[in-house]
Image (cartoon, rainbow, N blue to C red; front, side, top):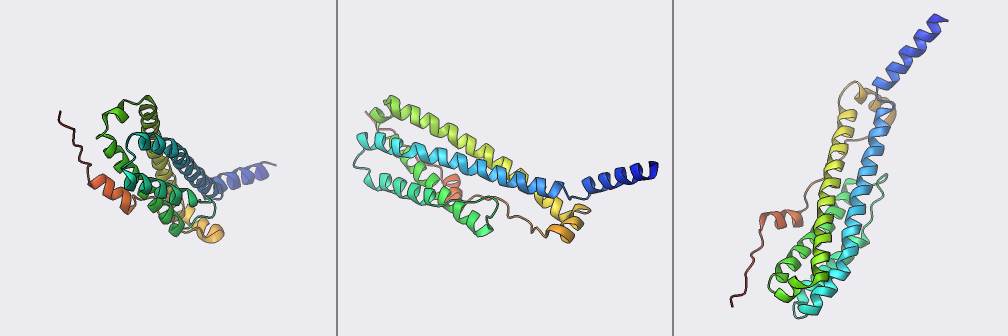
Length: 198
């Protein structure tokens, strides 16, 4: 009886330490954090039509900028990712679409600086505040996703769990979430704000 108990205990400890449970759990965590990222991007996307409508009321002749935002939103919302079946190429395309939307929104915020009446509009102010909050949520969600990918990659590449992965799962290393080219441009190019002289 004691031998059976000790054998069971040893097998249980071995199975926990070898990655049979931790690798699938880490994969589930990556999927969940990616779903959170996409949810926050959807929240941002849902704010944009109202924001564009308010800006259009004050700055209708900024047609190119408004059109760019609407088109970037359409492209970003047309892309969906199934976290459990996503490929590095799908993630990169999704990131680029979201980055283009970030870039277009950045330009929209810059032109709003030229319209004091727009900046004073309560609806615009509330939408801008919600957009800023959503951008913060996106950052937090992306950071969680980056950490989840790092944890998963450690499990599938570092022994002894990597041996389990090689024998049972064959999960490749996941591509890390990066800043898209459009987002990098927004980061590198600080918008120039010009105040109207009176």
